Image 1 (cartoon, rainbow, N blue to C red):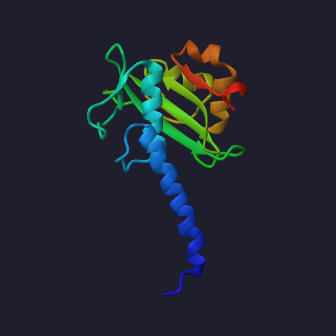
Image 2 (image 1 turned 90 degrees about the horizontal axis):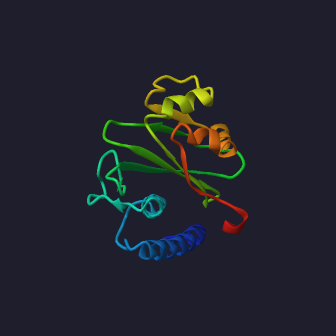
Length: 171
C-alpha cells in the first residue's frame, strides 16, 4: 500500500494527538473525547465565576452552576484573527441564567463575555441588530464583538460581563 503522501499528515496528526492528550490531562479530563476547546472553555469559565461543572457533561442548556446557583451555558467561537469566517447565535432557553461565550482568534484566547437574558434585547438594540427574536437571542458578528469590547461600560448596563480580556501581558 502506497502512503508516502499521507506520511506528513500522519506525523502532523501524531503531534496534535500528543498535544491534545497533554492539554486534556492538564484539564483533569484525560479520557475526554470532547473538543478540547470546549473542555478548556467550560473549565476556565467555571474558575472565573467561582462555579462548578455540572455532574453530567452532556447536561442540556447549561454547563456550569454558579456560586448563587445560576445555570450558565458555555460556548466558544474560534476564528482566524483578521476576518472571521464563523459567527455565533446566542440563544437563551428558559433553563439558563447566563450565556458565556469564549472567543479564540488564531487559537489564542481573546476574550470571554457573559450575557444575561434580561439584557439581551437592550444589547441587540444598542448594536442596532435587525434579526428577529431579540428578546432571547443575539446573532453575534465580528463587528458586534469589537463593539462590545470597545464600549464595555455601556454594555455592562445591559448585563454583559467581561470575564476575561486579552491584554499585552497575556500575550
